[in-house]
Length: 433
Image 1 (tube, rainbow, N blue to C red):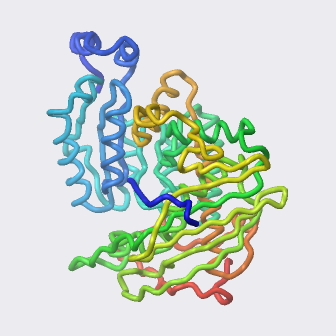
Image 2 (image 1 turned 180 degrees about the horizontal axis):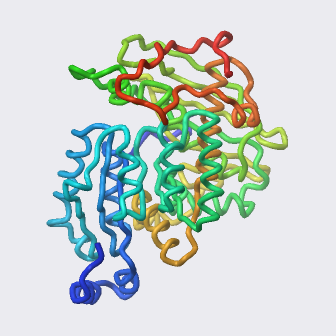
C-alpha cells in the first residue's frame, strides 16, 4: 500500500441599503442580492455546526443566520457569541451583504431545541449538525415543516433511521424542497472532474476499488459534575454507537460515498471484521478498527479500512480500477496523470462553502437539488460494515435496510432517562436483530 497518501484535512435588507450593497457586488451576484433572503437556522452548535454557519455566510449573497439551538445551553450561547463576533472585519461577508441576526429569543437549548429552530417563522433553511443519531428525526421534522435542509453526514446509525431519511427524500421531492448533505467531496471540483472521467470510461468498466480512513484516536470528553448518564453520553457522543454510529459510520462514510459514486450504485453485501483494544470508560463501546470486503453488482468487490489507533501510519483516500487502467480518486489522477489541472484545484472554492452555494443557487432557480438518497445509501453502506464487524456475519443490503434494530429511541428522550449499559460488540455473539 505504498501508493496511499498521508492523511490531511482537513432579515430582508431595506430597499436603499440593498441597492447600495448590490451596486458594490460583481454583476453575477447582483440578481441574488435582490432575491428573498435565505434565513438560516442552525441545529447543533458544536464546532462543525458553527463552522457550517460560517460556511453558509460565505456561500451566496443575501444570507442571514437567524436562529440557533443545541441540547446544551453553553453550546447554544457560545455559538451565538461566536457568530455575532464574525463579520465585523470580514470583507467577503460585506461583499455578499450577509449578516448574523441572533437575538436572545432565537437562541434555544434543551432536547426540544431542534423543534424550536426548525419551526421558527424566521427560518427557511435549516443546517442540521447534531450527532448522527438524531439526524433522521431532525431531517423528518424539517421536511415536514417545509424547510430546505443542509444536513451533515452521516444521516443515521441504523436501518430504521435510514428508512426515515429515504421517506423524507420522497417527501422533499413532492414539496420541491432543497436538501444537500455534508458529503462535500460531491461538491469538490477535483473529485467531480476525476469521477466524471471515470464515468466517461477513462479506465474502462470498473472491477474493484479501495477506500481508507485510518488515523489516530480522535477525542473523548470528561464527564462534568452533575451530568446525568444521558447528558454525559450526548456530551461524549463520539464514543457511543447509538449517537455516533461508530467511527466507520461517522467518518469513513466519506470514502464509502466515493466508492458508491464511482460505481454509481450501492453495494449488495458486506463481510467485515473489527475490534477494540482501548479500555478506558470514556471511550464508550466503539471499535478501534474495521476492515471490510464490499460487494457490488457483477461480482465486483472492494476493500475498505477504517482505523483509529494512535502512533500508526495513516491515510485517507480512495482508488478504483477498471478494465483499462486505474484511478487514484483521492489523488485526482487517471492512469497516473492528473485528471484536472493543479491550478484549477488550487483556485476551486472550498467544498465546505461550495455545498451551500450549490444548494442555495438551486433553490433560487426553482430547481432544488435533493441529496438525501445518496447520503442515506452511503450511510447505510457504512452501517453494513459496522454491523458485519459487530456480528461476524455477512450482511446484505436488504437485511440492513429492513432491520428493526434500534440502538436508542431518540424521539422520546429526557435527561433523566436510564440509558442502557452498553457492552462492546462480540463477533459471533452479537446479533443484528
